[in-house]
Amino acid sequence: MKVISIIVTVLTIASIQPVMAQQSHDDDHRKITVYGEAVIKVKPDTIAINLEIETEDPDINIAKTKNIEIYKKTMAALKQCGVTEKDIQTDYISINPKSQDEEKKKKTILYVADNQFIVTTSATVNIEDVITKVLQAGVQSVRADFHTSEYKKYREQARENALTAAKEKAEKMAKVLGQSIGTPIEIVEGGGRYSQYGQSNSQSIQYGSIGEDESFTIALGMITVKANVTVTFELKK
Image (tube, rainbow, N blue to C red):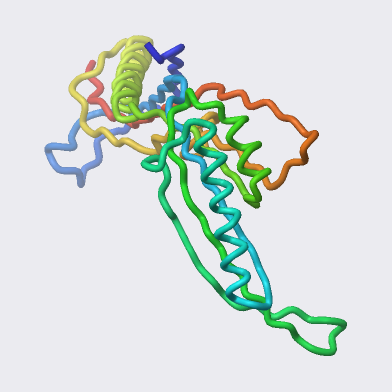
C-alpha cells in the first residue's frame, strides 16, 4: 500500500451562541463549531516532465531548423531512457520576432522558435538520467512535477478523517462543558490540496542547464493529500 502515514490535526474555533429573538425556530438552538484537518502521505507514482526548447536567429527558417534539430536529439534521448511516443504531448509551439538593440544605433530582428511539450511517465523511470540527457540534448528548461494517480481515493480518505477528527473534538469540548453534541447543522469543506508541503498542486523540481561534469540527486519524497472541514453541531444540555 502506498500510504506511509496518516496525520490528523484539528484546529478548533468553538462558539456557544445564545438564542437571538429574531432567529427562526429552526435556528433556535445552541451551537458548537469545530475545524478538522487530515493529511495522508503517499509516494508519487507519476511524473509530468515539462520541457522547453527555445532557439533564435535572424533567419526564421534557421531558427525553426535549430529547434527541430534539438527536438530530434531530445526524442532520441528520451527513447534511451525508456520513454515512448505515447507519453509525449505537445503543449505549446510559437515563432515570434523580437527586436535586439546593437549599441543603441540600430535594431536587429531575431525570430524566436519556442517548443514546449510534456512527458508523462511512471515514477519508476530514472528521472535523473532523463533530466541530464535532455539538457545535454539542448533543452533549455526542465520542470518535473510528481503526482499520485490515486489522488481521488486518498482525497476521500482524508476528507473522512477530517470529519471524524472534527466530530471527536466537538464531543470532547461539549463533555468538558457538561453537555453533548447533537446532529450536524452545517458542514463546509475548504482548501483541500496535495503536495509535498501542502501548498501547491504537486511536488516540483526545475532545472535550466547542466554541465557535463555536474551531478544532482533527486529525492522523490512524499506527496501529502490534505482535506479540511468546518462542522457546526447542535449543542445539547
